[in-house]
Length: 240
Image (cartoon, rainbow, N blue to C red; front, top):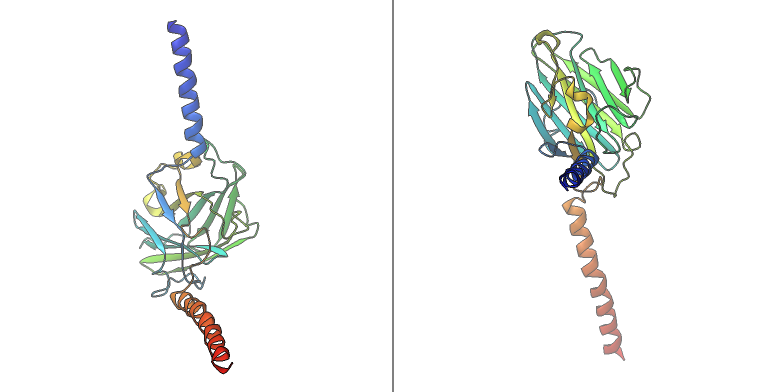
């Protein structure tokens, strides 16, 4: 009897672990790609350009995230006065939202160095040149550097109007200080486990929100058109 109970508990534990792996991500860390204006991807975070984005902060880095119904936009603002060519920021995306204990073909790393060199890694392959579907540019001063990304929906298999949650992690590496740091917090080794990444969602199902002026115009049209017909009908009856 004891063995049967132990076997049953082991079975339940396995099922629980499988469910946790299917959900995949660290539920305490989530960011939404809110609908916002289309930024100018030139590597410079201009005044007000990313004010309508979501953001997270870690170590000496602030990351901004938004979308415009066609592309995912991400910007990094890194405070760093030790200028090194090896300084890097990167985005990790789990396209299929399936977590796991090692990078799979749907897990993509989008990286850029302080000198502007792009790199892309899919699955557990070595980093290489970008394969298309995204771009990034940087700007740098003696006290900080910035990077702006544009990732197309097709690259990360998003369909505008359909809900989708992606796995997400951010890396910021100040080469002079040692190892890279991450959001969610994890070690470089742990960053290779997509199950340690956070969640990227879009409350608008990856479409832009209607501007209030457009919504107001539509509302006025809905009211005005019936009133016109009512007035015409009233005039017709009065003449007859």
